[in-house]
Length: 287
Image (tube, rainbow, N blue to C red; front, side):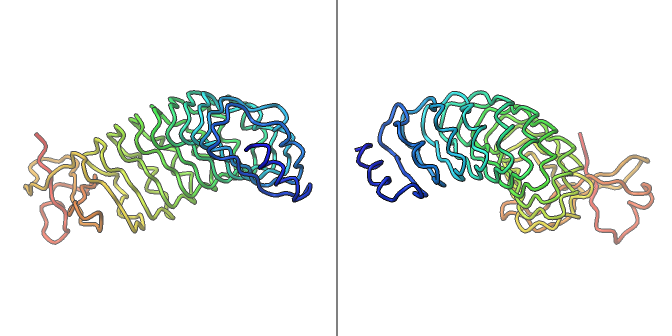
């Protein structure tokens, strides 16, 4: 079957642009792929691969590589030689580590899909993927995000749902082109103020975390969708301020259908100002 597929591809000549060896239960990559110097797309998904041959690094024109649903335990070193690669799919493997040297030759990468693996850590060298626009890290075991990730200023989508994150770096505010940020089903208790600098952000998903209150400038975001259900959000309990302390507020925002009021932490000039009618703030009674 494999030989027949490769033979059919060879009939297309040295300029063959796409080869799919999907779902063939391959335990090793068949020889002969290096004989397609013009190859632009290669799918090896849904097999039983755990390593790649050195010859695969010779596919210098390869732009898209799909290695999803195999049994890789680490990101293959050979990938750093694929200098034209733009889209890399590694979802559904058993990857626990990423060598920092992998990023040396992947400067043109725009999409990286590592969903459904076992990653606990991202190397700081990930900042070398300076053209990355879409990163998918859902369903891993990440406990933190390196601040160096936040230097990827071309990133427009970042998916980190279903991990073990407790915090997000304050430096996330540097990701000025971010339009979608998915952080649902983690252990995040506080969102950084830097989040409110993401003026292009349109979709924010923080459902299923441990958030009680949102940053001061949350209302400055031009969100089209905000998902924050299944968080222990502070409840509205209007009170009169009796001492000169910071006042937490509840301000109405258009968010997901399950939440009607979004608690936003803010400071008023004084308790006397808070007691003055007409400002639209509610005090929060904290036990």
